[in-house]
Image (cartoon, rainbow, N blue to C red):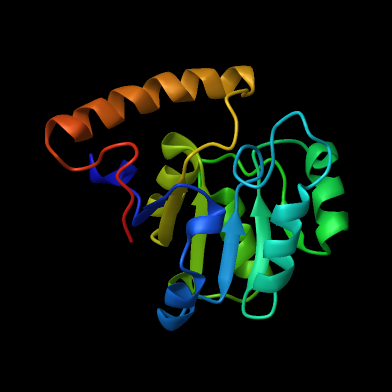
Length: 172
């Protein structure tokens, strides 16, 4: 059951203590795209997100790992001037392996940040890197994500039953 448990849980990407991550030796922040960095139906990166990511580029390698298409990912990568992987196939670790190899990273230097337990968090935990769960930016999701959210709700309910994890109780 612990394979679905995030290392850290925050309300949004704006609430993460990035200084703490730097102190822990993290060099690379791998963000999910949809409902983590921006809303699913927005083609451009929100201004506030763009500002944060540009500031973080002073201390970290910023990348995106998305299960979505290259067409969906490309505008974000171009606008932000960063790299990333489309069709990551999370919860498989394919995209994370590609990132690790391409950027010559060690697992202990990487963190994945996303809004889904059954894709982002599971992929990160399976790859054995730090994981940070954030609440989704919006309610609208892809159809397949709707299925994932139902699975996630069952996992969270079980975690709550045992006092392991609860939505809205953020931690580092």
